[in-house]
Length: 106
Image (cartoon, rainbow, N blue to C red; front, top):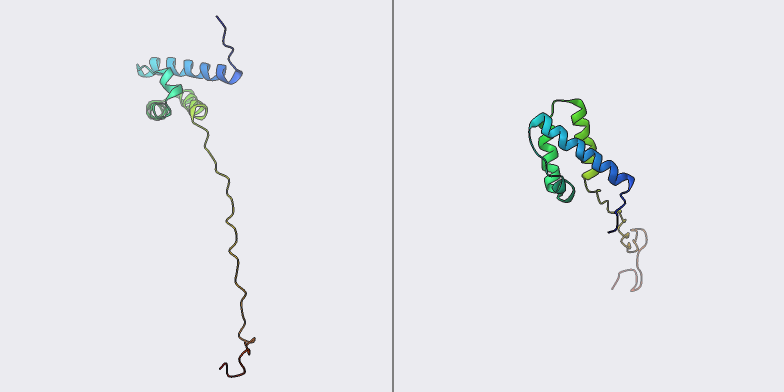
C-alpha cells in the first residue's frame, strides 16, 4: 500500500476546508460536503456564496475568502493577438492625374 504524499498547498487547502466545515457546523448548524467542495466548482461557489451571506464573524468571512481564492479555477486569460493590419491600397492624390490616354482621357 503506497502512501500518498500531499504538497504544502494541498495540506493548506485541507486545513482550510476542515476549519470551514467545523465553523459552518458550529455557527450555522449545517453540514458541508468537502468532496463536492473540491470537485464541483458550482457547488463550491454556491456554498461559499451562501455561507458568506450568513456569516457574522470576521474570521469566518476571511476563511470564506481564502477558500474561494483556493478553490476558484484559475481564470484562463487568452493572450491578445493583434489582428494583422489590412494592406492599404495605394492612394492616389487629386494632384496626380492619369494621362495615359491624353489630357481628355478619351
